[in-house]
Image 1 (spheres, rainbow, N blue to C red):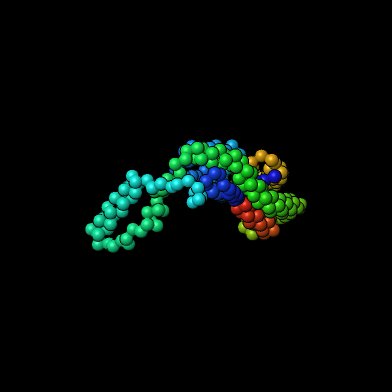
Image 2 (tube, helix red, strand yellow):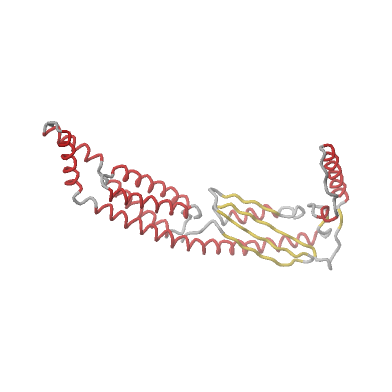
Length: 293
């Protein structure tokens, strides 16, 4: 079963004097890229989250965010004087530099100060902070489980789409194979007609030799055999329980290479049309495969 790299999950709850909400989002990526947004005072939890996520997920660009608010009815919140002084100093420097450049800035309001990270300590109760870390660590597997479920649901949709496209490719390969019947006779007729238009005498042995060389160059039997092998490989990957995105992406390159060769060797409009239809299907598959883990 395929797994998509796109998904989203969220959880929220309470722990002591804290209300919390965490969210995990993911989109496609060549490797595994985890970005986190965790309150600074929750020391060590960022690494806990990264380790839990990377142990379950192989590929994707992931965004983990954790928001914690303090219940106003419990405990006390404290202003960090050093942080406040730093914010005000930076604001004064910016205002002065702006005036030197002939620019004006809006006055700094209380809401602007409060929005600065670390301006207000979450709580002085270290015991409560340790407790929320434990509670969040327990909830992480549930969040990741929901995230994986959403990715598998989208992966099932991707699998249906890709399976149908691979089936269409198999049908086109069959049509290309049908064009081989009588192809040698048509090739000889066309070649002799082309030589006749030159109105020059050609030795029978030289004519047969040139025909043999061109026949070998335009033979598409190997391309069809490889395309059929690629179809079988794609069908096996679509039903695999292992991450198959990278292998499918490589397989799309191989599909495209054989389709290009088939078109270049084509000596009929029918075969060229089949080759072009193959390339359209390959582009469609490649676009879908980019989202597969």
